[in-house]
Amino acid sequence: MRVVRLLKSRPALSCMLWVALCFFLTSTVYMSWVRHLIAQQGGGAADMLSMVAGYTLQAAGLALAALRLKRRPDADHRQPFILVLLLFTACAAPALISRTAAGAIAFGLLMNLFCGAIAGYYLYTLAILPEPDCRGVAFGGGYGIATVALGVLALPGGGIILQGSGALLGCVPLALVAAFIASRLPAPHPQETTERPLELPGRELALACATAVLLSLVKNLGFGFPSADIESGLKPELSRMFYAVGLVAAGFINDRSRKNGAICTATALIIPFIMLGLAGETVSSFIC
Image (tube, rainbow, N blue to C red; front, side, top):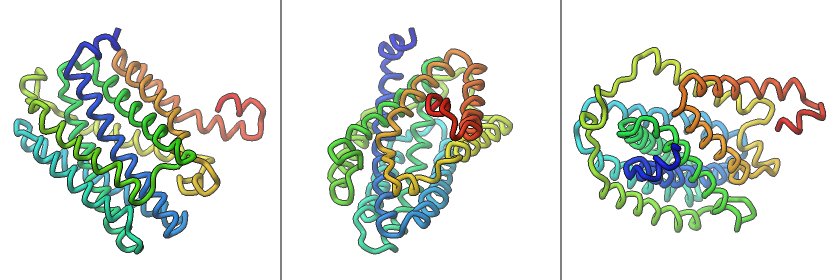
């Protein structure tokens, strides 16, 4: 079984735990920042800053990391990753505790840029994992662990993640631990772990980007943006724990069959439209 293989594979297991640590750090800080923006700016402005400007800068950070990795695939990327991680933490501090809107916005947007770069480095490490059929499980498992951990961390606060200085007290040590682990990891060498150079054809890249955009748009149909959900009393930190199950399942399915993974993706795009069509019907609550 793939779980047994994952547990027996030290590189795959280490990668999964490292992804979990990095995603837990970035998602915890991001959620704390969004709540800080809502308190300062209100829901509409918070959505524009986090969902539009923030996500755009995350994409830019990921692209910059990918560009560097493409240009120097054989270089030791541990030190650049640690630098990006420390810059992310340095920007997160004023973004979470600044009493002025300008400080929270400026440092928060910079934080999102480095958040994307962090993702670029751990996605690259996943892509050159020696066991190709464990990559999906390592990715989904890492994100799943981080999502559940975020929900558990929010339980003492009634489902609301730590805010301000409280968030920093938890995130700064976590960032230092992640940096220390990264410094101890063996340097990745693509030529030793893959049979051919890592390449992503333009058509596949376009398809991946289009799918990510569609999923981001469709998941909010009929529900509203995060700030609207938060202001209405929904606690994303807890509701996202169910997301972890889908992440782990997606990893298993995609490792086993790319075709079945594509079918699951298409299904995820269709279900929200079915839910809208069944709005007000008794059956819709069961489908949820």
